[in-house]
Image 1 (cartoon, rainbow, N blue to C red):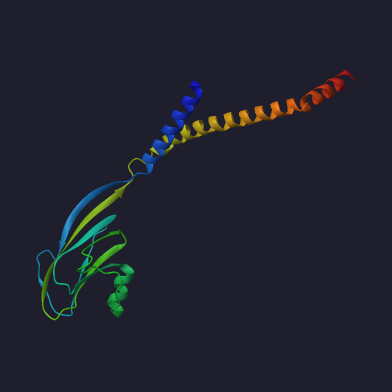
Image 2: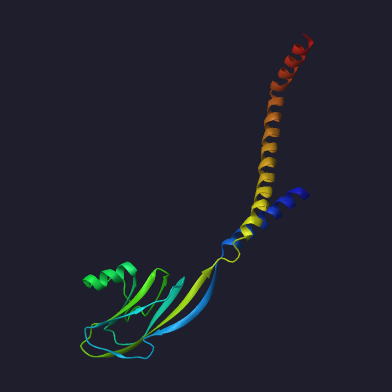
Length: 186
């Protein structure tokens, strides 16, 4: 009974260490505002801001009218925008003032679709994703293997025991034993 408890504890410890090894740490890198000082954006015009390298980011549109639209673009989308003026379909506006995205995004493009100047600010919070406990996976492996192998072997033994008892009931093992003894006598 004690061996079952030890195996269960080893298996549980392995699972806990395995989960802990893949749990990321999200570390704040800082916050920036675009533009640094609010400036009016003319009617039907665009302005773009480069973003620094990061793991995750949250961008919030502060102020501005409902005619201000913010696009988050990766390098390829920004290149397409500068050459052909095509913007992606996902956009931040009055209904969606905050968006989170991963580190592929490198540019913010702000468009004023209104007929008057508008002042706005975009606040971006940047985060790094780190897996500082990844080495725990190496510690989890022996516990997972030992615990699971114990239960596999015990299950195998139990099934073999059931099979042998079933064969004994039907006399198959006794016949084989007698045949074996007769061969040894010869």
